[in-house]
Image (tube, rainbow over all chains, first blue to last red; front, side):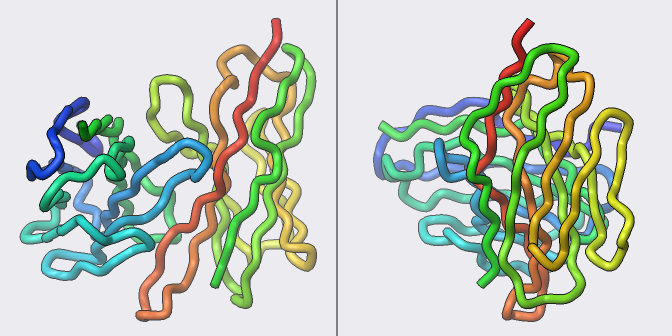
Length: 112
Length: 117
């Protein structure tokens, strides 16, 4: 049972480039979410999904897009990378929000 | 809007001693869930303990227990018999009802716990 799998683990981009962070879970969880973790700011919610075909914005959605075409996958797209998006990104999933969330190992993203 | 505050950026504890990490939150909801997550240097987020607001009894998980004071909106984590492996960043989290009709998590800024041998 792999749990929540994030790829890549590390990535360096140039300003203006686009890329997609992948997140997949094999636990048939309805709820999935993306967070960014910055020093001194804890985890901040970017986007979340309560099921396939349903997504919504979190606290810091600007510059990011998501889609949820299947229950298993919830990719996060950076449209035009900016240095302010340098962060560690976590994907999480859960049966619902009353249950503990399962986190991936994170992706460390640096924008030059 | 709901908020979660962890006022201790860093704490230290001697091995085998007890330490308490503080968390306060602000909410107008009557029913909610609270969580403590641990993030070791490996960066993986690991659930430590969960508390349902409607339950009077404080949650306990082996050496980890909480002191849940609903009226005071306080949710502290007590770690007994601290071990070197407890060294990590600890995050308090609140399950919030979002205005769009769905729920989300709100995390505190974390407390870094150092365990001294």
